[in-house]
Image 1: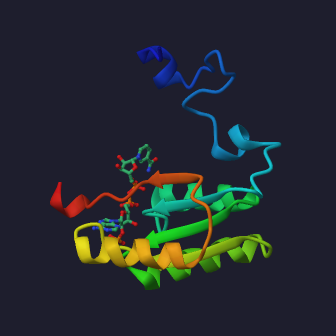
Image 2: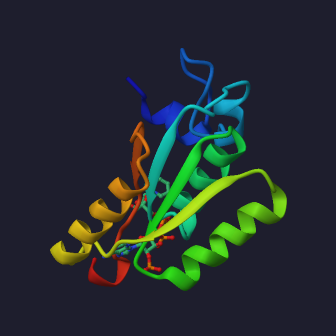
Length: 127
Ligand SMILES: NC(=O)c1ccc[n+]([C@@H]2O[C@H](COP(=O)([O-])OP(=O)(O)OC[C@H]3O[C@@H](n4cnc5c(N)ncnc54)[C@H](OP(=O)(O)O)[C@@H]3O)[C@@H](O)[C@H]2O)c1
């Protein structure tokens, strides 16, 4: 169990990683080229960093976002530093069941497996 000391200091736990470890450090040496990951909230913050590093490890990343402009800018940012990144952007507004169903249908139409679902969407203005 992570105790308060290790959480605050970032001191590595049994895995060799701690709260100060980066996504790049944790995934170093992993080839995720056979994986497809949906990242909600992937247009900003920790979702964007997750999408970037998953793409760096060769996963096919689907950025699920309600703000397509921000999501496409995030996609471009990732591609600027990793031209072989496989990134698609799909519209998803989690506050709308209609949008969720449309997203699911659009994802199914891509005929990709779903190996990872990383959920980082949070509506801070509603908190
Ligand atoms: N940042 C960190 O270091 C960190 C660390 C640990 C945990 N977390 C947790 O990770 C989560 C995200 O944090 P963050 O800092 O990355 O926040 P953030 O930058 O504000 O990202 C939140 C994302 O959620 C999206 N979103 C909000 N409402 C949505 C909706 N109805 N449908 C679809 N997408 C929606 C936002 O898109 P819009 O542009 O459309 O608003 C935005 O891209 C939070 O729960 C936070 O507690 C963050």
